[in-house]
Length: 167
Image (cartoon, rainbow, N blue to C red; front, side, top):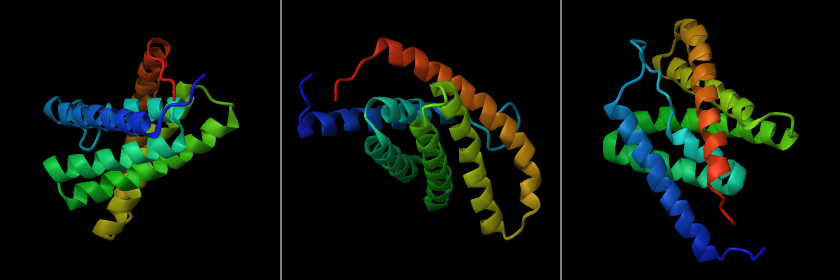
């Protein structure tokens, strides 16, 4: 197999950042929180998990961070960026660890990512409001992270069977 050029890798990363940003924006238009504040499906994570498995850790991290900066700059605020980055970085760290164990399926890795994304955001929220009472919300976010992570993992598994990236 021929190695992809650096230009191709950058172009593909740009396409994936754009796709993740679109998913993030669309998600704001169609709230799926089911009446529970702070719960989202996390469609952009389809791109991040896909990038992790098809391009590697460095690209998944870059795509995720750039997407968060772009989306928060266009549609959010510095506070939203702080929450998003905290959840995304903790989530990706856990997903990378599980990915390298080779003991978890894409769905399992994604589910852990969903749970730890919520944990990261909840810890930052507790620090911002300077109270740990907000941690009572953890059981709801735990279940939500599991469910959304499983859904995202199923989507990525199916997409990965259809799309092959040679990088």
